[in-house]
Length: 68
Image 1 (tube, rainbow, N blue to C red):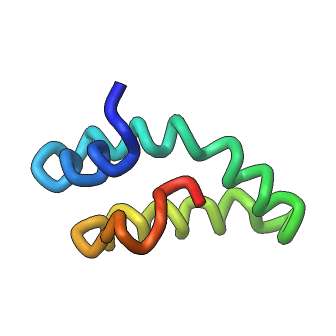
Image 2 (image 1 turned 90 degrees about the horizontal axis):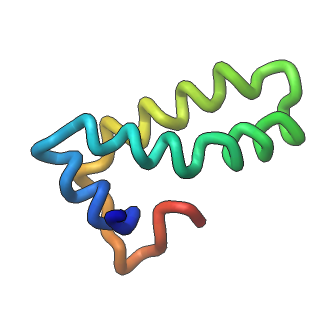
């Protein structure tokens, strides 16, 4: 299994690799958003993943891990 950092890097040339990040972290992120914004968690999670996917080329592992 690839690390989160490796998945992000690989997703730059193989976008489907990003799906594994969603599978690994989606439930925990949804749980957090459900507690913070109960009625909007699904929409917010979609926006978060879209922003993460579109900004993945700027990911710098020196600034923190994906799941933090």
